[in-house]
Amino acid sequence: MRGRTVHPVWGGRPTAAFGGAPPPAWPQAPGHGAPRPYPAGFTRFAAPGPMPRRPGGAGGCLLAAGIVGLVGFLVVAVLGYGLASLGSLATPTPRPSVTTLAPTGTTPAPTTSVTPRPTPTKPVTPKPVTPEPKPLPVNPYTRQHPGGTYADDGYNPPRRVLTWWPTADSIAQAKRWRTSNSLYAHSVATPVRCARDPMRIGEMSVAAQQAGYDAVVACLMRIWRTPVERAGDTLPRPPVHVFTGTVTSACGKVSAVNVGGFYCTANGALFMNGTMRTVYNGQGQVTFWGEEILAHEFGHHVQARTGILDASWRYQYSLKGNAAHVEATRREVQAECFAALAMVAIRRSAGMNASDYAAFVEVRRRSAGGLPDHGTADTLERWLRKGFTSARPAQCNTFTAPESQVR
Ligand SMILES: [Zn+2]
Image (cartoon, rainbow, N blue to C red; front, side, top):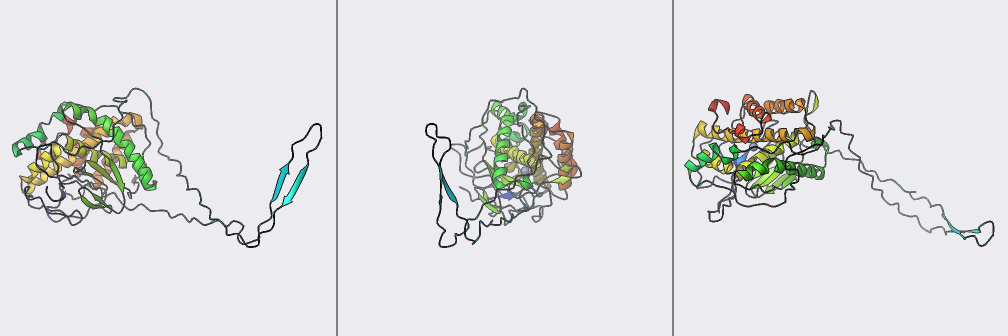
């Protein structure tokens, strides 16, 4: 079993935050410069940790991590829960005990006797009152969720995690799995029912975010199950963990300070930062932004389950310099394109509109500043738009695109 190792996509070597050294069997390509701070609004993708294999294979691990910089710390509104004083230390007023006698026969009026309680000899300690939590303000981004017929509607994805995933046996096979994967022959299920208002992540408790993301994962499963299974692979439902502070995943420790979300291949789990702020632009909230990040990480899950992820990492390790960087970028922007496919598949039921898509593009463009491996603003927009106009993962085959389109 290899050591637990995580490779950030940009930066040539694992950062201290992710820990570990490159696995000895997978020589790391020369660095692309020192790890950079994460600019606002970006997603980072990292890889390998311990890597279980198909039955019969050697042990190993792969981690994919996506880091979004549009994170901040949730401003926790500390509600001043004052303890209401009940009667304080004053002597309680004696409460009368009332006994009503049932009328008998034709007796006109009931007889009532009043027995006063004795006055307590010492003051009663007031009980603290737990105030009701403040309800969230009404969501101004509430949408219409049209009914109708939706694809794969009866599928309730079970909670089951597989511990191995397809791994290529050679560099030549790895190359092919990226460019000619059987996933590209099929379409995602669309439209899929995901009748949800956009999450207001900055105003939601961790538990509420957990429930929200979990529901979106179920939507993503219905979108992706069909093409992945038709491609001959399996798509287990990935658990999603909302975390704050530092999370210890099967792929190592990850801090919420710079991480929006990441995917850990070692146990096929999604992690979402529970301290992200709601993102706003000139039109208001950038709706479905947390959902889009989740869909990007789920895109890495699809890559993992179809062998693309492992193949791409292996191929990247055989490359050096700019070629390795380009390979990493292909992998990242494909996940982004997959996220776009998913956003389209839930468009009808979620009640998305054109401005939602424009906002995705705007935020991704804004986040693209100066990062290798995640594409320029133009690259991100190109692949987002390809995903927005298609239901076919083949549209997201970044591995056959000219290098000029994946810079
Ligand atoms: Zn990513």
